[in-house]
Length: 291
Ligand code: HEC
Image (cartoon, rainbow, N blue to C red; front, side, top):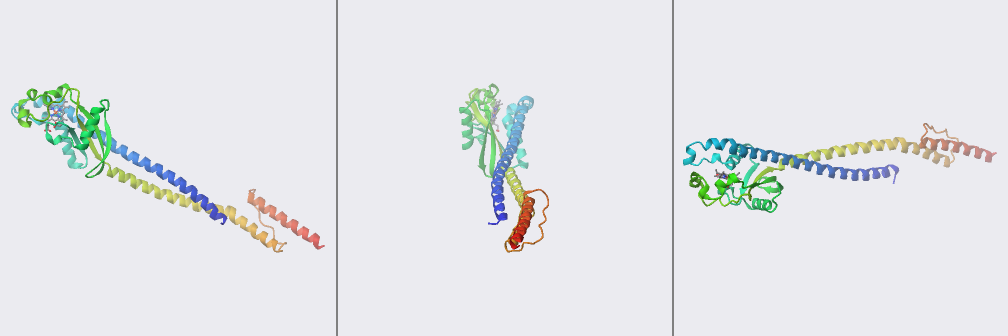
């Protein structure tokens, strides 16, 4: 195998190992940051849903409850859950893949009954009372999505409408009936706020960025390999070839050939200078023999 081929083989093996390590590391990093970006979005949406809940409970409900209409025909706009869910519904007109649920095992409005996986999340919170949030991934109808869930605890203000039908406003019973959404115990985890954010776009972006990076790495490695090859050829191989050809000619009897040019102080220059001296010595020795 020629010197340049050996050198190229070493460079190729080094670049292949280095390239694999770098690409594996960057892929992990890009996917990780895409997931973090999605999680930040989910946290922001969760915070905005909770703000709507708080605003409704503290500012809007006290005003609406003064409306005489509320006592005849219950106004669900006074209910924090209703406000948060419906505000998010408006947001979904622009971002249809995002969802916000207040999934409940025993809901007042059956529309909010937890589906299978949501029930598991609520049960998980019930079994782990200290747990403040749960982050998971699932395949939804629109592709992979990340969900952020937070437990909802039945506090004293909630019990008016969620413990016994007798305590709830009559207008509310007229509207929702007395079969659902009651029997909640104070301090128990009754529901979970669940925000789902689609992951397909950020993951696609991360994958595209990764492919672009791979192209850059491959082009850079190729250019580096070509420059290294040129360097090795002109600095090592060509000067050695000149000495080798001269040695070949000398071995075939051409002893009075001109001296080889030797510049610099590197190993090749030392080899060329040594060859020149050897050729002179050889010529002298042959001359002495001839005499
Ligand atoms: C004034 C009565 C009232 C109070 C007080 C109240 N809720 Fe509700 N809640 C309702 C009604 C009515 C609904 C159904 C709204 C709808 O149609 O979407 C509801 C819905 C919910 C839902 C959605 C699931 C479901 O049952 O339909 C959750 C979760 C919820 N409430 C939790 C709470 C919590 C937690 C509190 C205390 C911080 C609370 N609620 C206080 C009346 C009330």
